[in-house]
Image 1: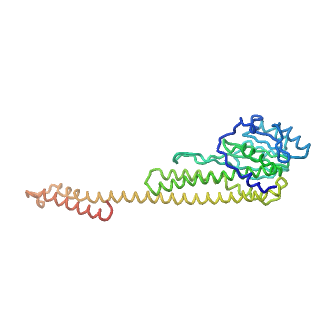
Image 2 (image 1 turned 90 degrees about the vertical axis):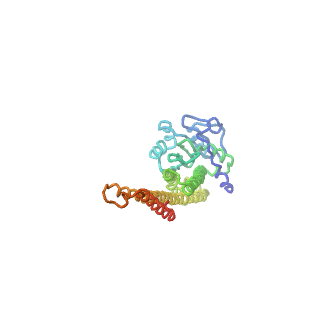
Image 3 (image 1 turned 180 degrees about the horizontal axis):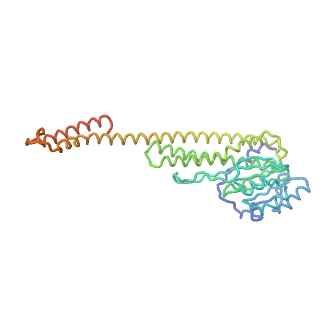
Length: 361
């Protein structure tokens, strides 16, 4: 029954901002409720229903589950759902106010999972202030007969994911944990896409550093490191929750799905390794850039020192003959001035030639 599960839950990543509320599968049921549907044996039942009607229908029949999708609900908008499903107040507070780190918490008969979504911000050229990574959040409440997804941010729409899963009802028949896995897999696949795009930015910066002596190179590198840190904060804490979902027995997670959580954890480890490698590479690029700046400054100082040494000769000669002593060599000779000037020029030329030969000029 799950032979094609991997195919169904690894989806092309949507790049649309926000939610297309005109789509029939994502028509709004309220201010924050994007979608509410009942699934029996993996098949979506006709019509969008209020949450209380949907869960009553499921619990009276003892079959199927409810999937409710919300987008940035307020505390007031979420209150009815909280009472209906008996959600823990601490988890509800996290879901409403967001800005949480990725985590997995077990409350009574439900799981609360926080996932950080990321999106690569397209830009023509990386600058000192370019935004590279934009983050959002998806919270998932998973119970025996319900799954509630709460999304924060302008990206990471779950509408296409819902539609994709609905095309394979035998997989949705396994229960809410299939939805949790699909969401986690989608989020981690986004991480892979973002790291691939960041790799291109790093390659561009590396090429600029080693091909030209451009100003602001350090600023671009620091900006990339800041954005990479933002990505790391989204990715690194998620490793433990994925490992727990893959190995720890949980009533809310179907045993057949655990293997697929392990696969998500492996992909997450790959992303973490890439981020670590990127950070080390940026450190190396920064050190190389600073070394180039130091070499360039040393070259400038050598040129300045060489010209100072050359100009020291006429300065010394003019200083000597400017002391106005009565008895000085060649002072009253007709060719004294031309001789001194010619000798000064010859000495300066010899010094200049020496510096040129040694690479100082």
